[in-house]
Length: 272
Image 1 (tube, helix red, strand yellow):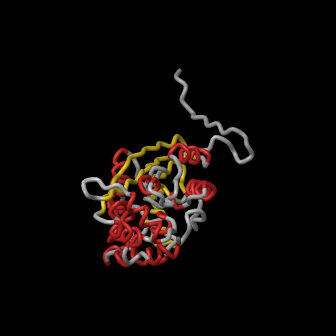
Image 2 (tube, rainbow, N blue to C red; image 1 turned 120 degrees about the vertical axis):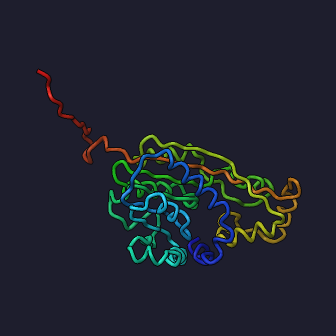
C-alpha cells in the first residue's frame, strides 16, 4: 500500500473526515493522562494533523513525524511554519516502517498512531510493530492509538464486497500484553459516515489511498451488485466504521534478560 498512500498525499486532506474526527477523540483521551513528554512520535502521521495536535498540547517536546510514504512527510514539512523552523521546533520527519523504527531504545515518552496500525493486517506484523513501539518507549512511556475493528464496513461485506476483517480489540489487547505493555485499556465505538452515491464513497477511498486495501478488487459488474444491495437510510448510503482505541504504558521490567526476577528496595529511616 506504500505506493497508494504516496500517490494520495496531495488529495488526502480533502477526504480525511474520519481520520480528523478520530484524531480529536483520541487526543481527548490524553486530557486524563498526566504526561510531560520530552519526545513524542506520530506513527503513520499522514499529512500531520496528529503531530500538530500533539505539538499544541506539548509545546516543549521534540516532535517526530513518522510515515513510510515519503510524499506524506513532504506535506508535513511543507506545513510547518517559518517560526517553527526558525526555532527548531518543526517536526522531524522520519521515513520508516512501524515494524523497524530507526529510533534508539527508550527514546520516546509518547507514541501516538491514528488509524494506521490496522493496515498491518497480518498478526505477525502487528506483533512486530507493538514490540518495536515497546522498545523505543522509555519506562513509563505511553502508547496511544486508534485502529479499525472487525465490524468496519460490515454492510458492504454483507453485500458481497471483499472488505478485510480487522482484528478484535481483545486480540489486540493480548498482543499488547505479550509485547510487554502493562494493563492495556481498550475501548470501542461505531462511527458512521453517509454518502449520496457509491461514486462519492469510492472517490473518498481513492483520495485517501485506501480503496484497494479497504475494499479489495472486484470487477465492475460485481461492484454493481454490491452497490445494488447496499441499503440506504433516509436516502443516503451508510458506511460504518468500528473504531478501537488503545492505551498502554511501558512498565518497569519484572525480570532481567537472564530470567531472574527484579526486586526493588527503598531505604527508609528507622525511628529511634
